[in-house]
Image (tube, rainbow, N blue to C red; front, side, top):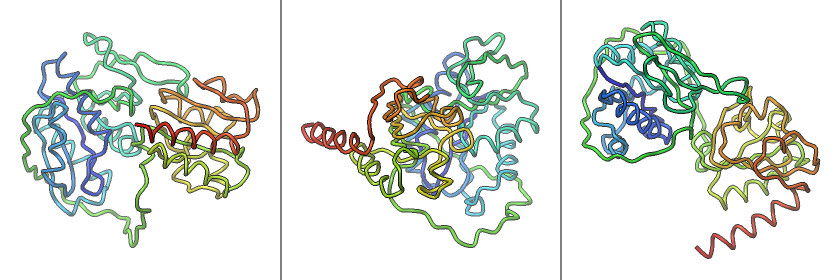
Length: 324
């Protein structure tokens, strides 16, 4: 028996969330006395996988085949199902992102496993197995009991954190039996903006709303983000108006994020937006409207014009960081 961790491979690189999943699995392992096994799909170097051993991963199954570089959810599901059988996995962990949302439910049906998304912490009971998950768009926690032999969990980003536990790592080539590796969708061109910080992996996010009044004014948010090494984001109306790219939209209908610090600048705090950032450890709100709903969920709030406050804040932060 084992705990199987899906290691997300993004262009041959491991993302922070996979390291957090490994840390989570290590904590589960200590309570359940089960070994941890990782499964990674697509071409990736052994050197990149070595980072996993710092967080308790002792064994990784690597499907090192270029034909799987393009993610096809139904194919990935079949590969992971075979890994579940190979390792007799009783607990399977996925990241709580779009990829996890696409694959985990499919796998749950195929292996008849209970599935709990948006997991907030380690189980608070093992007999019976019970774990807390986010509910009602982040306004509450639900305690979920899972009775199936196999269990699939998707812990939220930053809900557990990184905990080092160095071990020796063994990497094994895993060759699945798949007869349909190609997608029905043919990607003829893909353009990615170079540089920057990934929104889903960022510890700090600087986000703006229509309170900034124009697309040009988002340059001050970009400057603040550069100072902090942060990612930029926006509310849905901003993305709908074309002021910012659609992939920066956070909220119930956009990306669900859980950074350590979230700056909400010129964002009123509609329930749909708050649902996407409620997992943030600290929310800093700046808004001209002192009655804006965002202040109800903010840890720190400042009533004022973000166009004046953000440049001053950026200058102060540069001075502080320069002294370190």
